[in-house]
Image (cartoon, rainbow, N blue to C red; front, side, top):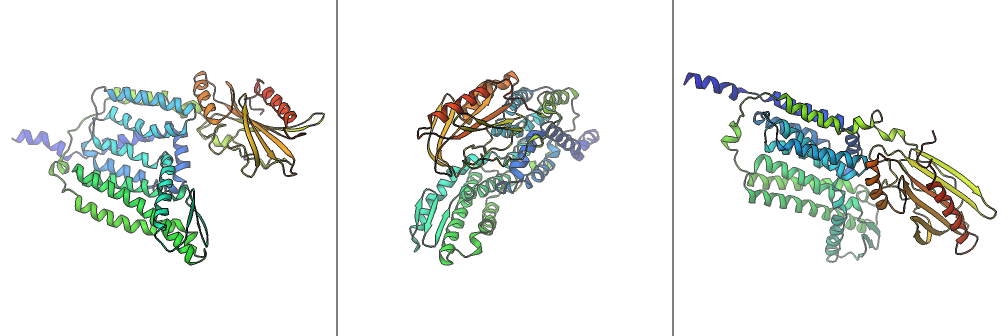
Length: 482
């Protein structure tokens, strides 16, 4: 009896701090080796109001790890998780080099999970620690359009029962006092993400019954959407009653949180009713002591280094530092082109016998996730352009418009990489996915404009087409002139 208690005592008193420190160290190494991806997540998550909860995620993750530290145990042999890690790393590197932002961001928490499962024995808490990072990852924007559409429909339904006359055209609400736009920020996405995150975390710590967990999750998500609908309706009603003079119309985000926080109190009051008493096994479960296996750790670290974006793009870990600030282009016939995140810009003015052509060549480094011709804010065509018609021929876009002098004019543009011209961003992405396997990452945007001599702009079209194709066939197309 004495010898048995002596052997059990170390496992009962084991703190698990070594295992916790090892998990945090692996996380830190991973974040350093994937710094360009981490930097991208920081810019589009931590600096975005939709993800205002993101600053809490690292603290929550560390607390989850601390809570389960005594159950962590080092793995003593290789496992299938290492193979899954290598597959994820290969996909991550391919998506990164091809500059596919969403899958690159989404895979990073899974790489962390498989790295930890390759070093530690399987524990559900490792899933929570790793995948909680998803809620700070800017991949949730795909839900914004359907939530925006749902919000518009529900607000329209409720407004039909009020005394306020309202007319809905798309996502624009017209009332006698003015207009409101139910934009992407009004979709309720921020409340939806926050509620999903908090509900899942509460279920992990407090609810063991599946039916109770589903009920709490449904109530939590439905309540978040309802709060957003109430916020929009209240803003419209206040705008009507105050003739659009109330400050709440302009501080509508604050109003949302004033409504959302009391709702959270009620939601977690329900959660307390559904909670299960902590079981004895959960409170006292302590894994026996173990030592890290150098081979497993070495395999994981070697895999992370081999597929590391930081190692590939060293020393340019922040590709944005290579960019030029958006130039104020001088053009007398149209506003500034909407292009950003480019490494260099080449401008030319050519004079033919009858036409004056303006040409622009934007070159993109291909480093990081944003430095690409297909950057989501690169629409090329100015928003205020008075467009008459558009057409595409031989992968070149032609935009017929009226210049400020009311004369007919033509804007021609195309995307380009080492595979040639592409008419749109989708085509460029498909080409880039293939070209990156050949080591080609750079891209460009070619654009040119001219006033037309006749109404059909045929002469201007021929001249611009010749110049853009000449650029596209030039060996220096993707070469930085510096």
